[in-house]
Amino acid sequence: MIYSVGGIEMVSKKHIIIGSIVFLLFASTLLIIYEKMSPQRELNNFSKLIESENFDDLSLTIYYLNAFTQFPLSVEDLKSYPSTVKVTINGDQLAEHIDLLNTISNVELIPVKNKSRIEARVYYVFKNKGIKIFDVAMWGNGDDDNSIYINGKEFKENDILINVISPFLPK
Image (tube, rainbow, N blue to C red; front, side, top):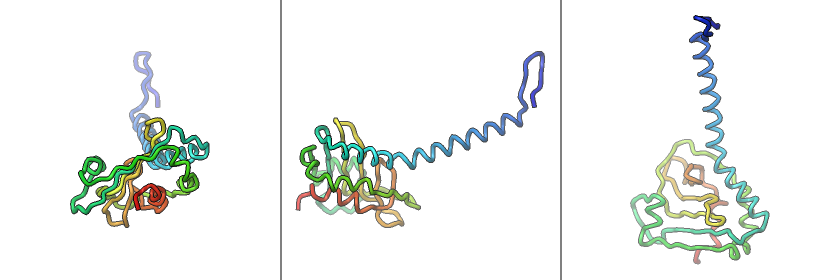
């Protein structure tokens, strides 16, 4: 309902409240969809990059712990831990494994039901021209089986994301 007071039209509080609620629901829905789609979108962008077969500026850096530790490590802890091994792979080496890299397009990201704390033992990041495309940290210690983190978001473990780095790790 619109009221006119001294030549100024005013909308009733009821309409303002209803409009605000509708706007908040719409904005929340968009935010939830964006949050869930973001890692999948990054994986899809990576797959398109691989399909273009332009590996010149592509790199993969892997950090993994080759020792036993009982306490949880964040990604930053893992990267700076004295026993962590760092492996950097350039575009030429990645190009030799194009079929394996193409399997990333088959990754199905399933969010975990119960969020957990990260216990990073493996972390890797793909970059193009020095800019992060996506990163993966393994593992979470929640109620679900082992979980993985893609761009900081937690999902159920997926063997494809483990297998894609296996040829680059020392035997």
